[in-house]
Image: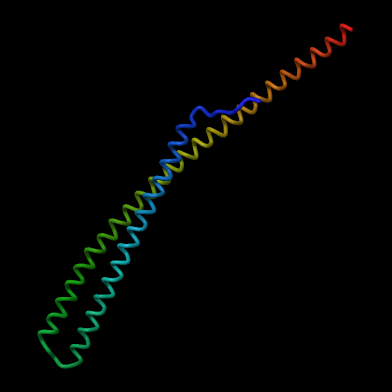
Length: 149
């Protein structure tokens, strides 16, 4: 029996490697986004703690220097949070870019797999027609042998 060999198998192998690479890049981008979001959450919690401290300072004894320092810390945290929001946005865009790249690579691989399946179906059809020809020839030969006797 003949063996099926896909002539563009090396291209399909490359597409599969590119897909696995794109999956790794997407996973790394997702991890990076999660880290940036965690940092943002921690900064927001820290700001909230400063705000609670500020309220306590206003309720207890009024020490103006402590209140001024607390308000400065809250403003600093707001600036840091704003910068971190930008980092999260950048990480989200990067993740979206990696997702689009992964989707495109997956589509290319699937199209090559479809081509391979079609080539295999054509191979099977050719093989079946070849077997049918051989059977016909064998039948014709046997029929001819019986008539000669």
